[in-house]
Amino acid sequence: MNESDSGYPDGFFQRGDSASDAIFYLPPRLVTHIDDAAINAVSEFYAELGIDGSSGNRWRVLDLMSSWVSHLRAAPDELVVLGMNASELAANSMATERIVQDLNTDPVLPFADDSVDAVLCCVSIDYLVRPVEVLREVARVLRPEGLIVITFSNRCFPTKAVRGWLETDDEGRGAIVIDYLRRAGGFDDAQLSLRTPASRGYRGDPLYAVTARAITARAATSGA
Ligand SMILES: C[S@@+](CC[C@H](N)C(=O)[O-])C[C@H]1O[C@@H](n2cnc3c(N)ncnc32)[C@H](O)[C@@H]1O
Image (cartoon, rainbow, N blue to C red; front, side):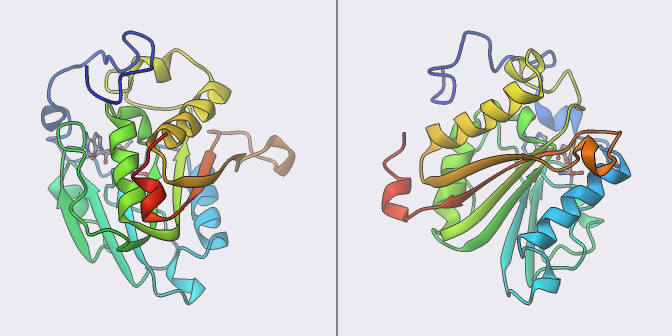
């Protein structure tokens, strides 16, 4: 049992397809995984948070579990993209650095402490079998007050998502993400919001976001 499994029900991190992720992600998928309105909600939220280049912030942004698009309207000063497929990452026109890494076998991020201003993870957190370890690493590499933005919907590759994610609903998924952050430690003020409310005319894929801010490096190492 690895560290992330402890405290979760038996089988929470099991997946229908337990083969190496390198096999599943071998073919490039130059597609989108949520509908246009949900993608637009992601872009709008990043802009609101000052993450994209139009903010005037000269930020180093890390897009974790990335592909050929990072859903930013304007490129940040630096955009590091980390994912499983080199061709997808090569097609990401905003990227300034590309890293192929399987976070399920190696959750250690290849960055210095406090070296990143914001971390994004869009419609992908459900594929991690060691999410607490990965998020602990995110807390380490984020500068104090740096932002993490984890977005999710109700669509996924079902054979690759963890069972605990598949067996709950949207509300339960929000609680899972917040719980991952709490267990990782090093984050403050986690907030869940629905970015595609029916009251604003959305009818398609729901898009939820969890945001949190990194606290000090000393607190990040103390864990939950
Ligand atoms: C549904 S796609 C989402 C891609 C992109 N974030 C987006 O918003 O379009 C899932 C992504 O997670 C990445 N991924 C899946 N398993 C991973 C792993 N074990 N380590 C690192 N990245 C992974 C894949 O490379 C893929 O790009």
